[in-house]
Image: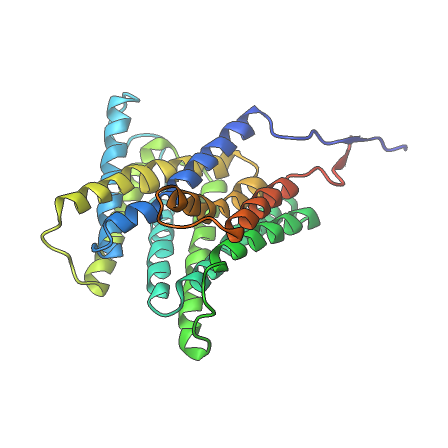
Length: 307
């Protein structure tokens, strides 16, 4: 029997475009984190994470009641095990990263952590297609090269040796937590809006416990630091995670996943905009490579499919 082939449609459909834009929104908010964090650098990171996630939970409770007209925390039932897994993965990504920064150079730790988008894209390809396409790997490699140029462009070589190995392993653990978090969002039952307050509240509790065990509490907390922590809860820890959940759930994993490489790019652009950093070749190369990698991963190369 003669087989007929036609080319797969190029580009995104309407739902995928909306999801992709939601992921872009999340990336922009995450890119603002270094600026916001720098404005309240005296606050221990896990203490800030606990406050921000608690504020995110409060905002989501209020939004559910006032905007959507539903009682707080209601919606389709979600197993507590899944909610707990999301919260632990979220806090683990934050905690492991900050702990890694105490042991190894920041630029190298960031680069190790940012292997996670390629791990996520590869895992999603295996779960949905049973294999990873070469064009996706090529796009990921190009985007990662751009991230590497950006992160390492102005960094020194750092200290080499076994003393920093623990920091790199913790950075890898942080990236792995991001992979788990994103896979939990993409696969399994849909996480309704009513579940987000519980995820954030569980995350705030976990971050608070880690803070008490690992950090010295800053008290009393300056008013400006409290306001900045609340702003992080509303934006990068609140709206961004809800938008990212929609993006990875409804959008093309190969493009949405690699879009995470743009977080350092957005952060650099904002730092340049406020005069805290100078533009240079790493920014230009990083911009071109990240955008090119996402475009390449979404290219319809060899995209014929059987009718």
